[in-house]
Amino acid sequence: MEIQIPNAIIVAGGIGQIFTALIYPYIRHRVFDWYNDVKKLKPLNQEIAKTYGRYIQGLNFTFGLIALLIPSDLKNQSHLALALTGLIGAYWIGKVITQFAYYPMYQIPQKTIFRIGSYGMNFLFVFFALIYSLLFIHNLG
Image (cartoon, rainbow, N blue to C red; front, side, top):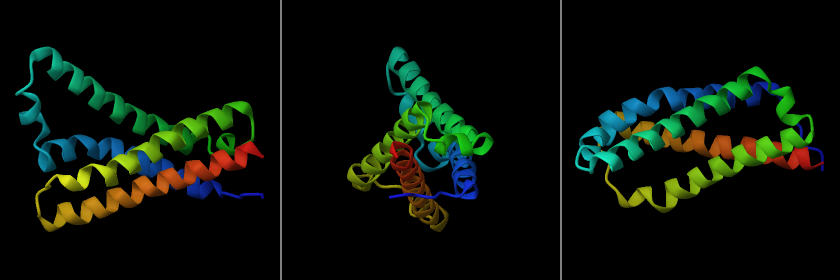
């Protein structure tokens, strides 16, 4: 089965991933009040939480940059394309599973903007998981 993914779809996914990286601090601060919660942790745990937050933000930005700059290389069926799309696909599939399995148990502020944003972010996460899963399957070919 030959899967064709236009570069424009990959680039759109890249722009979306960069957007998630850029909006991440706003969501942590305004929606989740994350910084005040982190202040309640011991100093070392504060730094660990901040570090992992930066890892997430950095990965989202870097994955987006890769998709934006070299979309054709993500589907050239090389071993590197297979490994990279597999890694990024697994990352986003894990995010989607976590998002739907654990996050509904928690309350987010019920402002309309946050509810709309929640649907938008969930759409993006599923979109990213789908793009990279399809790219991975294509690269298996």
